[in-house]
Length: 74
Image 1: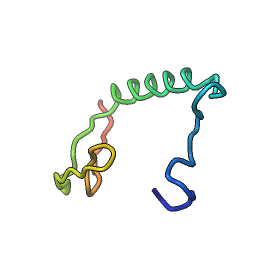
Image 2 (image 1 turned 45 degrees about the horizontal axis):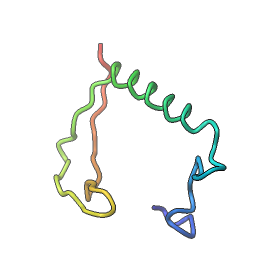
Image 3 (image 1 turned 90 degrees about the horizontal axis):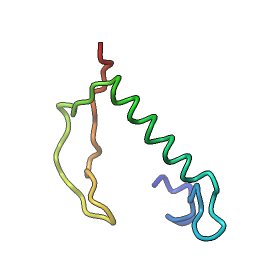
């Protein structure tokens, strides 16, 4: 997190509970479709500088990020 928000859970784009965003499910489905279309048109590979170092926080994620090489598929 960048430190711009006072609390780590302060940014909830769709909210939660009975008054959550009515377009949340549509927006999430739209994001899945866009990702699927992009992945069909792009080749994705790990960069040679990638260092495998998993870090356990709430979820497991790469400690130093995951640099990728993205190229268009001919």
